[in-house]
Image (cartoon, rainbow, N blue to C red; front, side, top):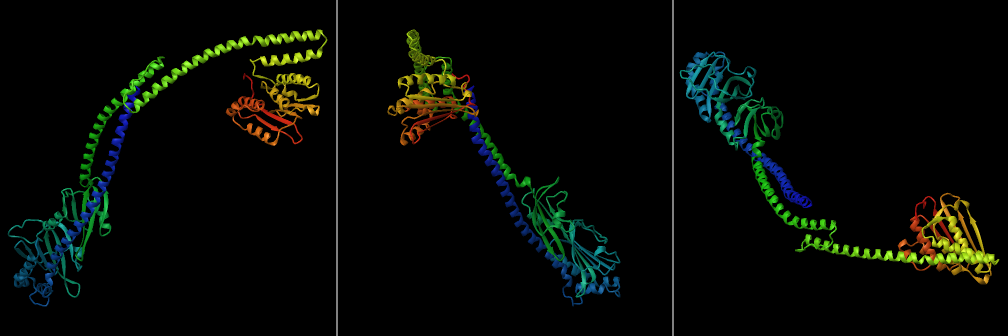
Length: 605
């Protein structure tokens, strides 16, 4: 199971370090390519629209110039302008005028017809509902008294304009031979009596849409690109690759700036819309090009497909490689786990075979070393256990002698009483008490009253030793008697006085033991003597000793009484107890112990 887990994790890791970078790279590159393709397409389309705009303007200017031929040779009596001016006069008989000037009018209109490529037909209206002429593909007809074909709203307006694409009409003039209707847009120019703006006639030039469509086709690089030429009223002049789709974008384009780029998305189109304006005194057109996202992102999608194919191949290779690597990596681990299971079952007499210098081989060597160390530790602990059993047996045998001595002291005390020697009996009893207190190894924690009793027995013997030249004073708070304290707390500190501080020359020794627990938080024990005290250097050394850690105190060999008591206090009360030493200038030595009462030693041995 463990090896299987490693194999799965290894495969997941290899897949992650391979697939994630490729996926991120694919996402970033796809985003970058889309942006670059879009920017490049917009830039190229803008350049192409600018070129197409110039071509369209040039073509329309040529048509416009043809319409201005009406004003050639204004002062000549046989000019077209002069004919129109005479024909619209109220004193002119229309029939007579047409009879005399029909061929001359035809000649002028034919010149205009031949001046520009793509003109389908030319219609001339002289006056209002008076004379009409139409030249269409070699057929020339005239009419008298026909209703005006000019838009009612633009009559009398001297400004020329272009009518959007529509099917050609015959302007109510009958033909002996039918003329095929074609798609045209019409340049309509009112003829004015210069320099005034009085309209004396109307000229309409129908231009085949096919000629403009050729220019539009050159502005598209693909069948997926759509091109429109519309006027400000959103009428279509020319279109390429369109099939009557909705032109919801036209409102925004017509109301916008002269040129621009915008993103558009609706049910009929989703992509980029690029537009530019063609303006003249006779037209106000907008060239619009649509680039659908599906067309823009063809190359990006192709690259994404290639990247996806690559990542699938990489994933397949990674899976194969991870299986191969994990097999060679996990098999040694499985063997090592098998040996570990044997050790867990209690078999320590195995050796893991080691091959190679890789990490698994290093682990196997360390395992063999650890196993040998464990075996050595087991053997050592076994020998120590045997030694402890032996020592316990010897200790039990050694207890016979102290018990024998205690019983012997009791017998001697009885004889002292029989011999009427109470002082001897008192001393023997003190020694017996001390022996019994020391022999009771089952209790490490005792009430302070027992510890004080042991100290009193010790001092009783010392008073006999110094022939009553020793004064002992006790100031014990009754509340402190039942407080539990570590055993052998007072006697080592009292003993220091007789080892280092007692001076026989003075003739009298003094020691005072006090205990106070009235505050309820601390048991304060103080041992004060009138000995020789210690020097300032020695006092600083003792104070530094009390600042040392428990581990250092265990190794401390000097001041064994103070260090032993302080070490045991820290072992029992952690870092909470306090101990201080002082030596007044007048002599003597003072040891003060502060034991926290909240800690409690109940249940400790």
